[in-house]
Image (cartoon, rainbow, N blue to C red; front, side, top):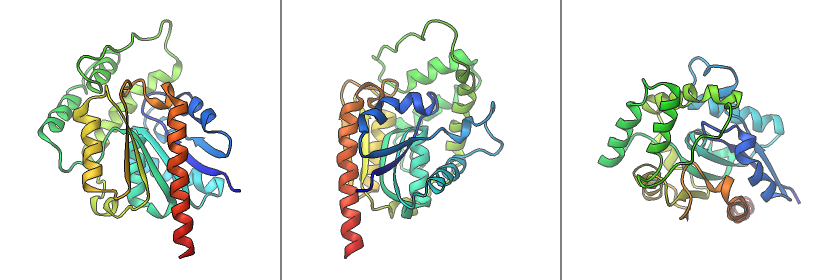
Length: 261
């Protein structure tokens, strides 16, 4: 029996293996899961002209190098936005899509609260790196959530790239054309994990909008005690792994039925 094949895209902060190592371990055996680093962090600075299309091209290269004609795609935060963009442009390559609080999902049908939130993100642009990261994190959670203090000691070397990388995501979200009509034609199963303590004007609204406007086969799973910066793939990997396995098994059984019809 062929293994389940999945590519996992991280968010804009943790490297892919740190983000997904526990989840990949929980998914085994029978799952060939690749935690793919973002193209954004290939060098010390974001590549010139970087956009979500750069991440799409990177996923295509990874899948082609592995010899995977079709696969499951998982994306968290900024990686979730890239996964949505991939689904719009290359739906024929995907067996399913799993979104772990994507940071952005197009620039249409925003509520007033969502619009105001993005104005606050724009106001972060000129802040120094340490202050930028703290305010960025505060916007992603409910107002009463107490964020953990920064780890003691010197930050890891990769952390120096993150403020510029996050700002690159925020800039491309303002200009990128996530093609609504093409995304609406994506008919494979979609799983969405939402933290109950995340900012509902951001991630809750995105989940509601995607389920309402798109994706006829959409499953929302709420993790009541989680938020964007202690997400289930790191804090509850076993539970999320079980959900993803069910999601993928159902997607693959549907794909086999379609191929035989």
